[in-house]
Length: 98
Image (tube, rainbow, N blue to C red; front, side, top):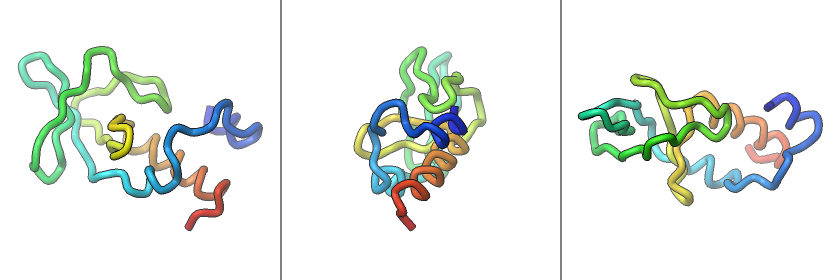
């Protein structure tokens, strides 16, 4: 999908700007507490519930325990760290951002 997007351009305008992606908060680890999925801040400063059925909107895969994730500040969505970092690099080249 990312290769196709690189060749043809995005299918729809991105919902997050380059600044949003660059300002993404720190890392989170995906965990399960009492059968509920949470993103636990890597610095231990809190946890955020992830609604049932929510998944990474880049790769469309479900979150698994111990995966790393990032959260965009403006929209609050979580993404796999690898996915959003790769998208960030792709759009940075497209938008000529850093």
